[in-house]
View 1 (spheres, rainbow, N blue to C red):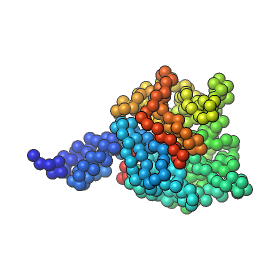
View 2: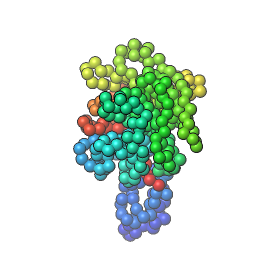
View 3: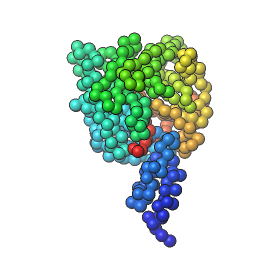
View 4: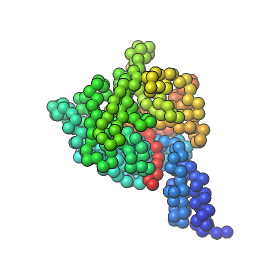
Length: 366
């Protein structure tokens, strides 16, 4: 019998077409040179849904570790570009900021492709310089792409940054600088940011949800208030910390409220509520169940997947990992929306004083 490497190219390509999970496709191409040549990226359905990878807390070296919920194993990947940087996951890419120089890039973590962005220093022009002299730092804690740069060059990157006050800015391929968005009407920091049906949506810590529509040809942004969540009643009911997330499910925009207990000095998540937002009427309707869907919440980024298509993912669960940059603590688990129980999805610990664990959606460069 002929060796595996001697199989006909068309047969190898036919088999590759049936591989739907990126991890499996990468492993398939790594079998040998013949398989790598035959199984081109054209054989892979880039629009097939994927399971987010859990990126463990950063260590002081040139590697990052990723845990697969489906495979139940950790992969160690050489990624020196993020050492000494802050990074936020969006659409399978990282928005990176080098701590010492302020250099900013979009980085694909699995093939190391970079897209240069205007620097962090350029964002300072949108802030009160006296406030910067007082605080001596500028934090970029949200970065969201409208589309995957692997699939199109027609995309927008929106970032939230703050010194004493908060700002939103965006960049498009071909722009020489950041474009500032007037958010003086937003009085607290942006808690979540998402792109949904042609608009960016943000929510702040006061429970206001805003829509920002970026003009196609001109740097004009139309901003409108979509809804307000009665955060005060929620907090008075439970007397605990309250945070908001935004996520898309089957074309609908969901608002996920997260309740944290900080009575012992550290934040500990104990409850979630999920609402569907009518972006036209500004009305919220609580969802008691997600069906077969599962929500993934992390630092900067959230997504929903159909758990029935994957092994190892539980339906009607919210998988969460530490989502606050300043609080480098381990607060992660899988929350059962039916009974309110929280269980572990990762067998070990992922504590990091450098950068917290988060989720990233694997993607291929085309």
